[in-house]
Image (cartoon, rainbow, N blue to C red; front, side):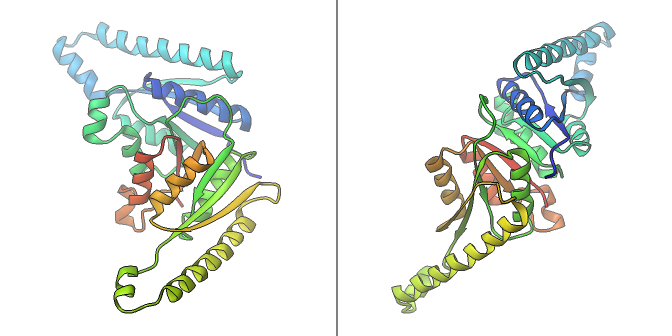
Length: 292
């Protein structure tokens, strides 16, 4: 089975970022992967600092040195708690672009759900969401402080091009976890069908056929993407995807959701699908977003 070999954790020294670094270290330890801790100092913030302090090079150097010290302390703490030796890098420039470029050379990007400026996050959307819009690599958004490796995963599937990559990535990031594959379906024009005189039996028959077909598709995905030793369950429910998925997260006490980015065209590459956005906003557990 292919394993992860390189992980980048984006660190801004917030509480969420600390949890992200701890989760990245746990995954790196389990996978024997290299871990790189990256902190990016905004180039525009440094420009503002130069303007306010009239070009003081000493102050700018002090800001960079403070970041290096904090990053070193983070790496030391991770080594003490997990035994993982992380690489450290402090960079300057456009934050999103720098993190995205670092992620392109890695198997996995890990970041906190929110940063050090909650008000800005609420107004502009979190750094995590802005990265997810354009990053092509699997991106893990950490919402909880970890205390062990992932045990229970939810993988929503819609049988699009995103389903197999999401299931494969779930296997890679948590090779010993139990995976629940969830598919939600809707009866098209259900209200109008009833108005037009469709019987409850006809609608129920349609739902049964949908469940059976979804079950066959999930069996095929399991055969293609999971080894025979991986534990997996199949859940097919009628309803809107977001509520169905979030209900299963609660019911199974899941600690990770692995979901496709859901853009369907080149124009959508800068967007997240509505289901993915709802899951990011509504879930209290970690979310791994995968591109095909």
